[in-house]
Length: 354
Image (cartoon, rainbow, N blue to C red; front, side, top):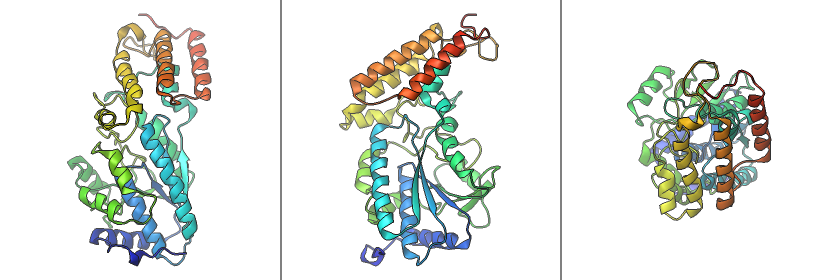
C-alpha cells in the first residue's frame, strides 16, 4: 500500500530535486545501496528523502541496506532513540512494501573501547592518538559493505560545512556533482543532499512528516544544537570525528564534552555518572604513574596504561555502572580483558618501568 505523498505539505524545491535524483540513480543499475545512518540530522534527512523517493516508484529491483553502527559506547539517550526509530521504520517500510532492510554493525571484540583501554592499555583517544573512529565506527560498517565488490554508499554529506570539506568534495567529485569516489575503494559515494544547508536539513526533517518514525521533534529535543554527526563511513582519507559531538559518551578527543553537559542541564540526569567517569578518565590517562615507561615497540616513552592503572579504570567503570544503573560493559568484554592482562603478565617483552 503506497503512502499518499500528495496529501502532505508541498515538498520544498531542494527536496524535490534530491528525490528525483535518488529515483534516477536507483533505477540506473543493479549496484547494491548502503545508507549510513547515525541518528543525526544529516543522515535522518537523507533517509527520509530515500524512503519518500522509493515510495514514489512503482517497482523495485534491488534492496537498500541502512546501517547503524553501535559502538558500545554511544550516548545511551541517542542509542535508545535510534533503536526505537529503526523499529518504527522497519514496520513502516514493511507495510509499504519498500525494499529497505536495517542492519546494526558492531565493532569486533578486539576493537571495542573498553577492551582496547582496559584490556590492552590504550590511553583514551586524543587529537594526536585518535584510534577510535576507525576501530569503533568506520571498520564495522566497512566490513559489511566490503562483502560486495562494488557498492554505492549513501551519505548525508553537505557543501558549506567547512572549507576543507568543500575542497575534498571538489577533488573527489565525478561529473554528476552528487557522486564521488570513495578514496582508494571501488565504491562510489552518493550524496543527494549535498546542496542542502543547515536550515534545509531541518526543514526536510520537520516538514516531510512521512515517514512518521523519523520524528523531528524528538530529534530536535536531543540535539539542542549539540553538534554534527560522527562519520559512519570513510568517504575520503583522513576524515575523523574532530569536533563532532553526536557520538560516544566516552569521547576524550575534545577537552570538554559540552554536548552531554548541556543534556544534563536540560534534564537528562541519568548521564551525570557517565559524564563524571569520562572527565575522570581523560585526566587519569595522562598520569605517568599509571603509564608504562616503554611503548609496546620497545622504545622509551609514555607507553600503555599499566596493569594497576587498567584495574583502577575497571573498578571505576563498574562503580559507574552500579551508580548509573546502566549496562556499560558486557561479560564477553570482561573475559577478554582478563585474558589480555594475563598475556601481558606472561610476556617477557612487556615492561612497565623504565
